[in-house]
Image (cartoon, rainbow, N blue to C red; front, side, top):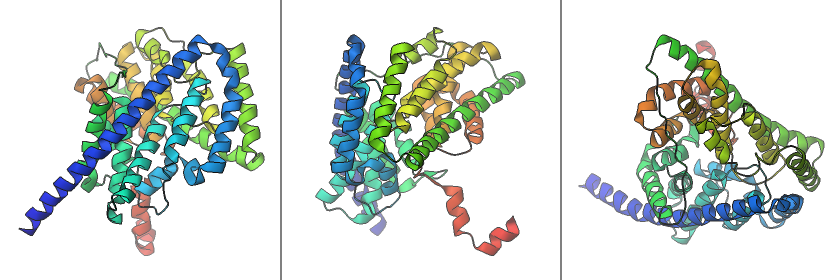
Length: 414
């Protein structure tokens, strides 16, 4: 009877809490997506707005330094609390990251959107934990549910979003007790967001070749390329941030001069890689991309995030992977939409250390027929990425296992 009472209490409690998180995060994420569409359309219609990029950058640094408390840690703050950390996630993080990201997109910084949604979801869930005076041991579940809800609503992939939130906390390990509330909040957030006038990109893979030894060799080469690019992306952002802090340590100067460089690039080269750059995805799937698109988007995103602009990495990673896939298509003699879809997902997997979530996202976006070749490429890209992800707070289950193993056992095992 005690077990039955426990399960009843568990499902009632987490159904109510998960639903509340899903509704709130779904509304917040939908408003964020609509704001991004508005400012992107405005920038495309008024190119002069990119000259405001230095002002936006300086304002963002000022706001975070004077009002943000520990909010400047961004995704890593939320992930660390989802792992059981004791720091407070300030509710002010929500307006800060919302406004900073929207303004960055308005003026053309090459940043994504999922990081903002994950941060807002985690902060909102942490605030609910305090308002509802829930037990501290439930805090990890609430924050994880908020993260998953934000990711799910942004991309319209509730299964992948839920597993992403669980997998990103500890690479290679899932907290099964959190599955129900995290998935419930994710699917509700997705459905609530769809009530608003938002649009999720959808693409079709129109040709999937039959598995063969030759195909596996080609997929291995593709996975190697995707893994190296995803791993390099993560390493370069971390390296740029650390070197700028070490050598300059003047965030105002860094973001001001960096903004001038971005403006010069856009003015003298191209505006194609500014902001979300969603046309890059459409061009990759339609065969209209340039072979160097993945390089341009890669460099501008690393630079934008490295100098301090707020936003996410995932959408740029989709675009880098898709355009890289388009460039590999004629070299490997693989169907265009097939290899583009593989790149779309696999570079993301390589940079985030979330292979299971990425497999599920690929299935949600492109269908189950792609599952076997997709997972093969994901595994290869994950291996060759070096497991150095864009989220420095992410733990490794292998590391945790290593640390918990007595020294003598480790010594003799090695």
